[in-house]
Length: 193
Image 1 (cartoon, rainbow, N blue to C red):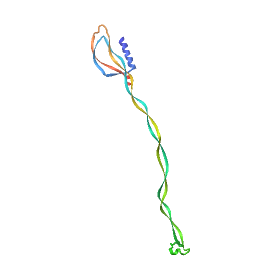
Image 2 (image 1 turned 180 degrees about the vertical axis):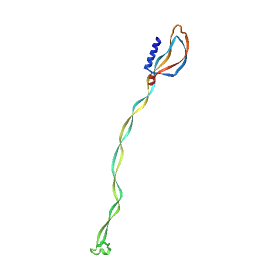
Image 3 (image 1 turned 45 degrees about the vertical axis):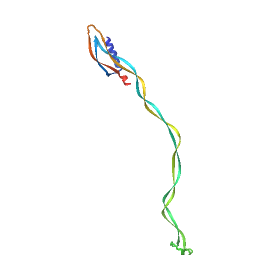
Image 4 (image 1 turned 135 degrees about the horizontal axis):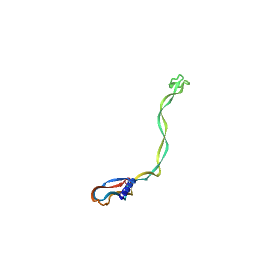
């Protein structure tokens, strides 16, 4: 009856937590069994320090120079070829024939006339330009929030189940040597943390 109770306790423990075999702990053992025997698993827990990378919010700050743009207009000139009237004065007769020196002496025969025609002429034109420069006006602190991984230590509970053979002696049953493979089991919840 005790064996059934222990088996029920073990099964109830299996329902609440899942166990995984720790292959490294497995060993072939030879035990002496007297009577009706079965293996029970004893839970053993210990606290261990564990390192874990945890995200931490940090502010990175640096001093930066503030600049202001100062602009002003500079008057420049450029040479541009333009169509312009090209004019000149000539002394012409009434029939628009150029007069010679001797004709100028005669009154009212020759007159001073301005003649113009369209032609290309190089002209100096104003060309305003805006010139800007950045002037330092002070220093300010600029900060940026970042997430960094930081190594932290914290205590964690590790549990394992160690096998133990329990026998109930009965009359008429003799002791016998039995070879078994005995393994420890890890609680799956502890492995996931």
